[in-house]
Image 1: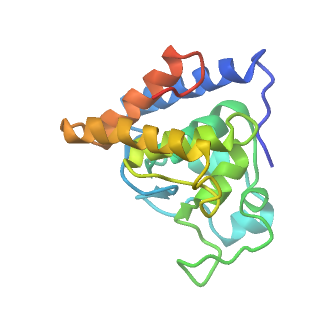
Image 2 (image 1 turned 180 degrees about the horizontal axis):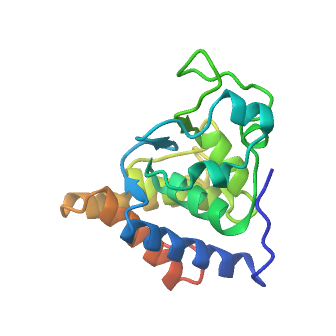
Length: 193
């Protein structure tokens, strides 16, 4: 299931709003930026459980009040879900309801495939890879390195260097995430390292 873009004329306008929401959530401590390479985790309990999956409970309602550890993709995902739409737990995780972390369907995290699949109505896969590469300070590809060796890979490497330069200057994950979101806002919805 993808998000709905009803209140903005362009995807760029929607991405600016998403980036502003990430900054707002960081200011209110709803998000804790940490290096987790394409995952969203909840430090204070499961994101959802067996019953939520069976009922296809609303992910947005399940996230309400939780403080989540996120990477850049996770921050964008959470604020997009909050702003734009209702998505059920089962819709998000698909038919394979078992997960590698537990023996039941309770979920402490969402993985990058689930997150990027949801975000594709707003961001290109390349933009998502660039954002995450800058945040994690290493080249990141959402789909088994399909960009490797292409011109797009050079853009991903440039994004990684952008983040690495900040890291070397002593800027931690939270500071890098703030800079990435500010870059998106300044460039009308496109991350340009």
